[in-house]
Length: 327
Ligand SMILES: Nc1ncnc2c1ncn2[C@@H]1O[C@H](COP(=O)(O)OP(=O)(O)OP(=O)(O)O)[C@@H](O)[C@H]1O
Image: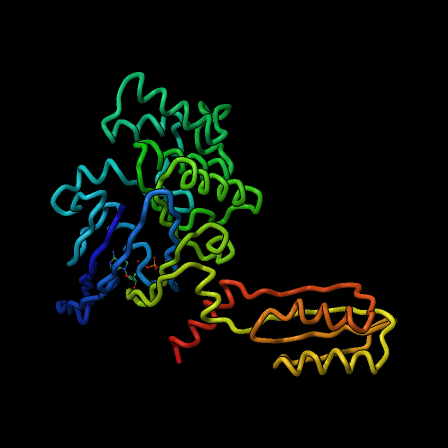
């Protein structure tokens, strides 16, 4: 388990005021952050640009030292024993950084493996297995500059797994990837957590991805933790609006008035428009009115052509929440 207790990170900025005069300023990028990552769990770290996500990931992966606070990885304090923690964690940044383009995929992995002290047959086998698992066996001996974006990203994942970390931090892992490649990558992330038991922390601006992958989400705003919960609970807390759209054929005005009364009696709003040979009506309510709308139509013997429920998504909740934060 990784636990961060009251972790803060301050950057000192030098601002040039005149030819010979500089002023120093302190920027609090992360403020008293508490978080926890368990093995086998996928955690999302969300926030607007500049919220402090990358800084947090860099601190967890020992690349940056916190200004204050404590990070404990499987009982080991990062500050007092960073070398021990380095063996247990790794970080993968989105985009195409952290790879040597002139080297082949295999040579890249061998190089990074050696940085972790791996040698000989064990290193060679691990590189080959990772390339195989990431579907890159055929491209193992081709220079990375000839890889597609998706192949480079898969190689990044292999690089992040070279030390067989217990915890993996993914900063925007699907940034700029085509939909099928991103889908494949999401599948790999799920397997790493749910089958291999790795603890994963990821940042992403794609909220559908966060909703699909993450067991729990931390939301930070200007370096401070503002919310911690499951994606489902966050949606339930912030979005109180369900929309159901129903298309019916051969309905009379009296039948539609009955359906309308049913919806309004339960506190839902109702809007209907005439469509070819029938009506389309929309029910907006603070609860899921799908069963109510369906049973009212059934009672009236209406022929339902289409019934669609728009469930609130994490994106809706984050928009509601950020409006509250900036108000
Ligand atoms: N090395 C640095 N020196 C000074 N300030 C920095 C440094 N790195 C980040 N910052 C500042 O710290 C704050 C948090 O940055 P950070 O990159 O952690 O945010 P982020 O949430 O990852 O943003 P993004 O979504 O844009 O990547 C920002 O105001 C940023 O400008």
